[in-house]
Length: 195
Image 1 (cartoon, rainbow, N blue to C red):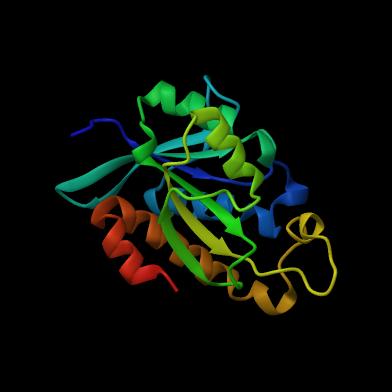
Image 2 (cartoon, helix red, strand yellow; image 1 turned 90 degrees about the horizontal axis):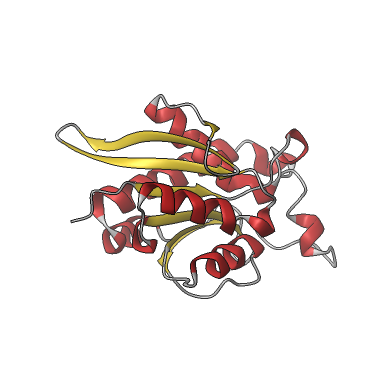
C-alpha cells in the first residue's frame, strides 16, 4: 500500500477576477476541503501552485491529502500538478482532479476514473503532462451556455443570480464526494453521488 498522500487538484484560473466564475469551481472545492481540515493553502516552493497538506477520514483511519490550486492558467494546469505529484511521490491512481463540466446541468455531479477530456483544457494539460488520463475526476456540472453564447466565454462568467444561492451547497457536496473517494473508494462514491 502506498504511503504517498492523495493529491486533490482543484482546477481554475488564478486571480480575483476569476474567483467566482464557473471555471473556478475546482478551486472552490479545494478551498472548502482546506477549511474543513483547518489547513491554509500557500505558495509551494517546488511548483507554481498553492498547496496545503491535510488529513481526511475518521480518527484512527485518517488519510493524508495534498490540496492543490495551480497558479498557472487552466490550460497549463498539468505542469504544476505533475511537479507536486513528483515532489510527494503520488501516482496517477491517487490523483483526483476537480473540475467544471459543461455537459452536466448545473448542480449535477459525476465521479469517474479516466475517460476523455471532453474539450476541457485543464484535463488535457494534465493528461499531456502525465502521459495518461487514468486519474480520478470529480465533474461539477455548470450547464451549457444559453443560446449561441460561446462556451469559452460562458465558463469565465460568474454563476447566475438564481444559481448563486445553491453554489455553497453544491461545492460542499463535491467536497463530500472527494472525501468519499479517499475513504470509501470509487464504486461506493459513484453509487452515492453520481446524479
